[in-house]
Length: 70
Image (cartoon, rainbow, N blue to C red; front, side, top):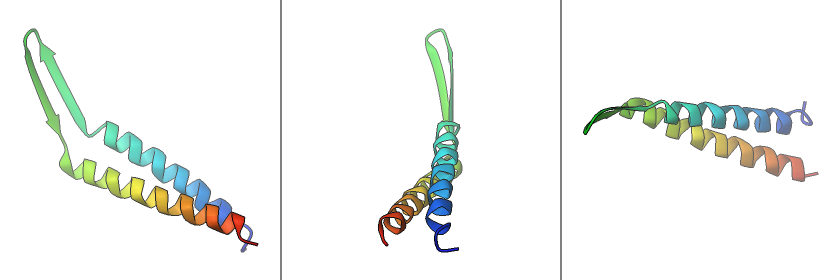
């Protein structure tokens, strides 16, 4: 099981990074009609995206450390 843990952490880190990025990209919207533009952001979704990206970094670093350690 010990040899699978770094791989699982790296894959989870990539998945959390992807979901965090897409969640952050979808957290805002804008509408432009002529000279008038309206924009809105979802702060809750943006906060969740930051948490997912933070977990992604944590998992990627942990997986990299376990891969290099023998």
